[in-house]
Amino acid sequence: MNMTGTCRRTDAARYTVLALSWHENSPFTRIAAVAAKQDDVFDHAFARRVGLTDRQIHWLVQTRVVQRLHARVFLHGSAPPTWRQGMRAAMLAGGRQAYGSHRGACATYGVMPESVAEVTVPFKSDLVLADGVVHRSRRPLAKTRVLDGIRVCSVERALLDAASVCSELEVETAVEAALLKRLTTEERLWTALIAEGGRGVPGSARFRKVLENRPRGRPARSVLEVLTGRLLRKNGVTGFVRNFRVTGLDGTSFEIDFAFVDQMVALEVDGKAFHSTRTQTAKDRKRQKRLEALGWRFVRVGWHDVVLRPNWVLEQLALAFEANCALLST
Image 1 (cartoon, rainbow, N blue to C red):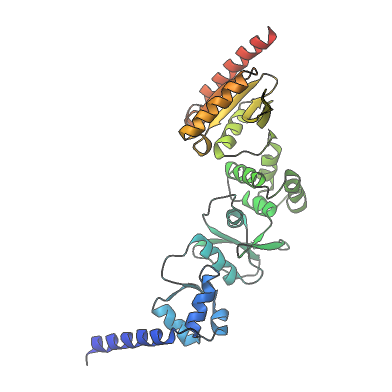
Image 2: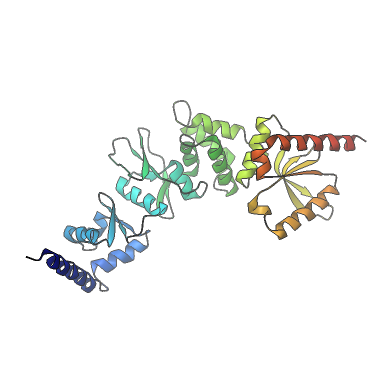
């Protein structure tokens, strides 16, 4: 008996049946249309509701029309799942009480990079993620909201939880990003720490430290600004205001990255995000000349300076203090 020929005829018959079944009102078409609205992710219950049988679902997996991401959760298409698809799949696999938390929720809010599907479920849940992180909580589950189709906790709770699995620098950067995007306020962050953090809650001490160390002024606009603030704080340099606004003689408003107002010294950090093009550089120089006319002395540093030669940054700052203090005293 020619088994190879039989298998080929069987495969051909399967694809023929699939092609004939892919009409406008077929379950195959309906599941593709609806799945496309939810990042191509769907569960077994949804597939049954649109009319697919268990045998047809199994056949779709075997023919790679869909992928099985979890026991009863599927992805329409053969491409590797994206981070968003992984988060949606984790929500469906975890049930109605599962929600994005920690780095998963922070990434959904756009204050951390998309790195890992991370969810929280009740303590007795048996959810296991092959490519993600599951947190089981004995505490009452957090209040949630749906953001871009993904169920997440509040941004304040997400940042507090993230402090238990991230470094202090990562948490500080995320906090500044959340404040910059106006997703929260410093008052609400403190309220969340007092209400939901405290002794015995992982990450509370780190989160508190980040909030206590926030300098005066507006939120940091880049990682480089966060690193610069940490460099100054580590070496006992205080008295600055971050992203301080100064009004020029013509009424134009300017912002100084780190302003030492009493000494009239401006520390500017030139990151690639805001200072990389010729137009941006020319604008920076023009702004600097206007502020120098008011008596401000500038120290400009870049990523290389802050990260690789921090002592040079501190030396330049000390020289600027000395020069301007001598000038102001005359």
